[in-house]
Image (cartoon, rainbow, N blue to C red; front, side, top):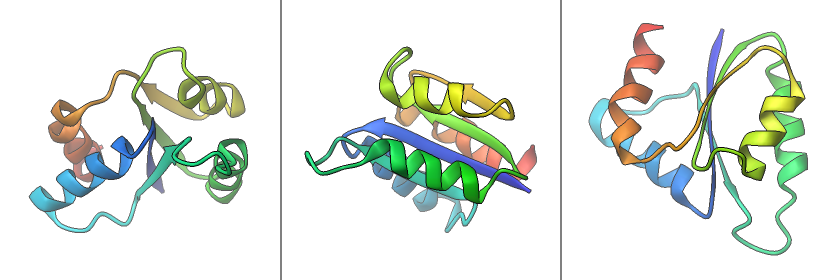
Length: 102
């Protein structure tokens, strides 16, 4: 099965998902990680839980910054990850295409 992870600093990931769902409706295969919103956020644990849960799936990851923590952790975690950096609201069309057509 295919899973999409949108991981960004702040609440941008949730915003991208919200915008995509306004266009196409609810997308169960999309998970978001809003990293470093509070000092208590354990981003490493969130990544670990996601990848362990979906280790048999094809995973597509969208992140906000190339080379940032939200990129390095998923990229190094597993070898079955497709990674797209510098995501923003313009990625909505691409996220939607990936969710439905790939």
